[in-house]
Image 1 (cartoon, rainbow, N blue to C red):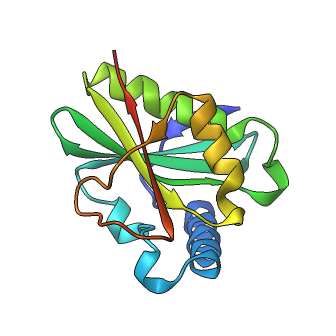
Image 2: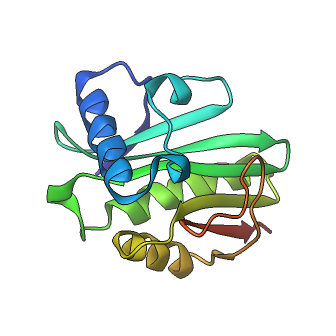
Length: 152
């Protein structure tokens, strides 16, 4: 599997991100859906990675800089056919390594609280993330879980 920084211009990533957005909107009410679209991911404070097996896009994830010491994980998604094969773990490790290289002190995320997000909860817990209060512009929401990882 090859994980690389992506410029978000290819048709494959546009399709995968639309699947991701549709999936998030299907699980969470509109006021609790915080997934970024292509334009939201094409900002200077976001680095976006894609994971490929040969010519097949199998997953993606992003790191958004909140400030000089704090990053947020965004847009983690694994293609349905590639689930359970370590794609999300590999992308998450790439993001965590980049956060450490940037000397962030903290890496946080927001994810859904519903059953459809249980695999994500287990992944983040396996990598040392724990529950935290809302951060950045987020507010308490019964449809959201907030997690953080202290670096170093």
